[in-house]
Length: 419
Ligand SMILES: Nc1ncnc2c1ncn2[C@@H]1O[C@H](COP(=O)(O)OP(=O)(O)OP(=O)(O)O)[C@@H](O)[C@H]1O
Ligand SMILES: [Mg+2]
Image (cartoon, rainbow, N blue to C red; front, side, top):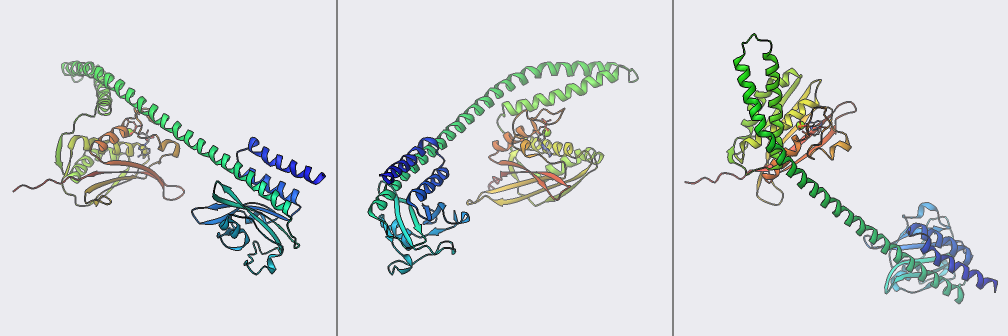
């Protein structure tokens, strides 16, 4: 009487697990502990079928070494456990070492376990694993013991099914949340775009007026008039604001591309000449590895703007000097016969921390006190308009030196020669 009461209690405890946790490994751990206790066996283990390796993997155990979990794998059909899984029915042996039908598979090499009772875990008609019990001494498992392990197996299958359902609900929830975030993000970008368009438009005319007026003032002043330096300061700042307004326009309303066939290497060389003073003043040495490129179909001014924004960032990143390596090359885009031109700008500057890296292409994201945060956002818009792509990574050559690598590529779209 006492015994059947204990069994009922054990089954009730296992049944309750589903209301207490949905953590699969916790459920299995509890099940093997309760089962080993109630059945007075030396080992209780649960194996689950892993469809990627076609094997049963030991997921939880009492009685076997802890490090066996996740490492012991049994092929369905192999040994008693494997046979229970393959045939989808209970298999028992009083003494496996004497059982001629089954190859005995020692599991950890430490035991002589003699008896075993294996019961498949099933979802409808599919076997998803096996629960088995083992004892050191030979033992014949009685009918009521077989029935008990079968009932436990049934309960475990239900618990596992619920836990997996719950996991899949969690996964779909997460997907939904991510889709929602992406939606908000694109709405935000659209709103930002509209705002930038209006703002830049409103800024353009007054800035042009300010510029004209201060140029006029400056011209009217004697070169030794000390007020002239103030007017020039106004001019400089107006110029800076004008550039920001231009960036805003680029970002907000990219505008149609003015296609041309450009010699990209020549543009790079010309720009470097333009920046040569800035670069040398900052102690930056430029190295070039420019491969011969065909003419590329692109918007000359916008292409220049991309290079300018990247070079300016590198100059900012190397206040104490360093090296800027610029390379260009051609490659075939994967799986197609489209040629793309690749450009890389690698500086030995301060590099970019991981938490900054994921934001650098966002408009108005900046870490600089004087920055606007449009440089890379504009680069990205322009490159994407050219059906290309741009990426950035921060690298560490050794412990003390770091740097940033910006790569972008655009399809070449060769000029078709007409004769
Ligand atoms: N070569 C680089 N080395 C280190 N950090 C960089 C580099 N390029 C970009 N960054 C980081 O990315 C941020 C965004 O760059 P982005 O060019 O978009 O804006 P910005 O340079 O801050 O402002 P601006 O609009 O004036 O260009 C920078 O503030 C900086 O933190
Ligand atoms: Mg910048």
